[in-house]
Every structure is written in structure tokens, then in C-alpha cells.
Image 1: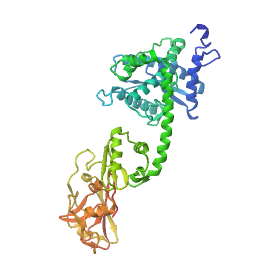
Image 2: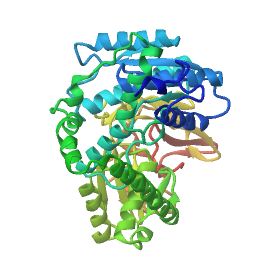
Image 3: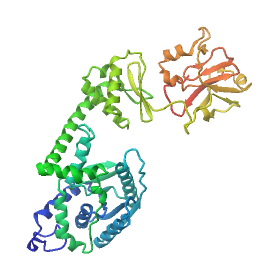
Image 4: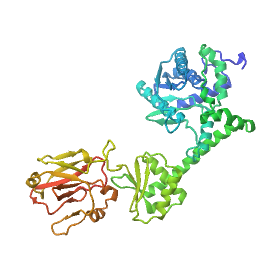
Length: 487
């Protein structure tokens, strides 16, 4: 670019002599900053030391001063490359040259992470940025992602088989752990950023030399293979592919939003609040939808419960079971740390897991306790508290004090007499009548005195135990409550 096109002042974005190149970058940045809350007084820019984030820091420094905002520079030191210390030094020197406070955080990236080293580094990076932001009182962080980054992201997601909601690329604004990340240059090609640095960088930071991460072109990494081999081959035949893929990403995002609106409307018609499982899906209503809309509803339902998406094969298997299994047939899909279960006409998210203690070991078969008049007794081995509540009529307190009690789990064939004039009945039948799912029954302890069944959690006391007026009513309160019934 000729010298006559340089701005009259080394501060980019000021004066009428700024080039169209500079105007495009400044306009995109200002558009992003105009959208932030009016009470903003500080923000940060993440700087790796590379040209993209460094150029963003240079322009953001001027924009922040014009708006009266404090701008911080954050750097994440991954320690994955021998030159990582040099990159941190470059970022620190740039911040000093721009008169901005600098903060860096060293992170440890688990190279054995099953997601791959790139994904693990990304998770560590955002966690570190979030920590630095909270410590500095910052709610917004600028990121230097550009059109080339967006194209690479879209290509990678396409090649990994993502759907419409996944191939939309990076969002211009996203929130993670309470921090808003702004990407003002997603429609700006990297070549323009490099050109800006070549034209204006020496005036703003004379000593700045952009760092180059060799892994960017390392074919061992998916993104490196794209940059070094795949995309250059595409460009030789389709030189305008960046704009085409960027437009595809925008259209995919719009289409995904429409599908989400359809899924939201469908989910409203098929889900109901069913304590203690929060929102559950009524299976009969779900099956009235087309299979494609069933899939959308299930994905949205799982997402709203904070779960990641199961594989397409597992989701299709769940739909197949729902369509073919009888109404009284148990269906279980284990996903992450939860179970997706069917009970009668409901599809529920069961978070309690199996019958175990918090450290993952199996809970004890039996636990002995002695009641001495306490209002409740904590039973760690069974994951809950046994309450001794005053009642107009209930178990004779003297009888309860007369010997040790024990808590145990069902073993089968136990019977309970729920009323003085009713015969004893199997716990299985009584739990079925109460509408307590089979998996919850396995988490409800029984209270014995010797060989006498005194109380079954979720059902109540046995009418054959000595009673008095007033008496004691037992109640089990689980740490991870399921379908228990106060009795």
C-alpha cells in the first residue's frame, strides 16, 4: 500500500485519511462494541502474540480509549511448544507498547485427553480466560477469530458429520461460564488483517514481530492439515470458497434457528413437570410426531437438561425402542452420568445413578442404629436420613427404644401390612400401586427391628408393630431423592 494512503496519525481509526482497509476493520470492531451493555467500563482482548489477535489489540486499544473503557490484555500460556515463553513475551511487550495492563495464565493441557489435544487446549484456554476475566472484573473478551478461522471450523464440523446446528460455525457473540466472547472479524479474511499489520503495525508497535505457531500447518493436527493441504487445493479450483462457506455457515445458522423454534413448540406440547424428575416427555404424545421432529424434540429435551448429544445411532435406538416396546416395558439408555428411562407413558432423566456412596463404592447391605429420641438419624452408608416424626398415632416410642434398628435393602418377597384390617401384601405390588418406578424401589431402604419389618421407605410402617397415641412416624429422606412418598 502506498505511503500516501497512510493515515495522518499513527492512531488507526482517527481522521478522514484512513484507508478502506482500515475502515473495514474498525467498522466491524465498533459494530461489536456498540452492541455491548451501556454500563460497560472495561473489557479484555485475548492475545496469543500472532498477527490476528495482535492487530485486534492495536485497534481495540484506540476504540477503548475513545469510549472511556479500560482494556486488559490476556494471554494463555499452553506450554505445548518450546517457543511458548517467547510468545508470552511478545504478547506482554505488545501490551506494554499499547499502554495496556497485561495478565497471563499458564495451563496444563492433558495430551492424553480422549477429545484430542486441540480440543483439550481449547477447553483449558477458555477456562483460563474466564478465570482472568473474573479476577479483573471483566465481562467481555474480544477474540481475533476471522473468516479463515470460520471456514476451517465449518469444514472440520462438516467432515465430522455435524448437523445444521453444528455446522453454523463460531458465533459472533457467545457466552461461556458467565463471560461474553466477542468475535468482530468473522467476516474479515486473514489476508486483510495481515495487510493491516504490515501497513500500520510499525507505527503502533515498532518492535512487534508476529509469532508463528508451527502447529498451524502441522498435518498431524486436523486444523493444520486443512490449512496446509486441503484448503490450498480447494482454493486452486474455487478461489472464492471462503465467502461461499461463510455464507453457508450463516444460512445453516438461520435454518437451525427455525428448526429450534419448531422443536421448542413441539416440546411444549409433549413435556410436563413430573416431580421429582422435573420436565418429562409423554411418550404417546411424542410418537404422534414425525420421526424427524421426534429427533429434534429429544435433542432439545436432553440439551435443556444440560446433557451433551448422544451419538446419532444411540438416539435412533432410543426412538426405535419407544416405537416398538409395549407401554409397560422398561427402556433404559445410559448417557453420561444419567439414565434416560421410560416409566409407563413417561420418558424421564434419572440422575441418581446406581445404589452407591459418593465415593463410588457400593453402599452397605445393612446399617445398625439405636434410637434415643432424636428427631432424625443420619445414615451415611445408605445415603440419607431417617426421620422420627411425632404423630397423633404411630409406633410406640418405648418399643422403638427397646432395641437396635437396622436399615437394609430389598432382597425380594418382603411383605407389609399397611392397615390393621388389610392383609399383608408384597412390597412389589404396593410399590406398583404407588406408582414408584422399579429402579427407585431399589434405592428405598427397609427398617427392621430384629426380623420384624418396621418400615418400608415410600410405603409406611407395618400395622403389626406396637403403636401408641401419640406415636412416631418414620420417614426416609434420601440425599438424591427419587419417587419417595412421605408416609
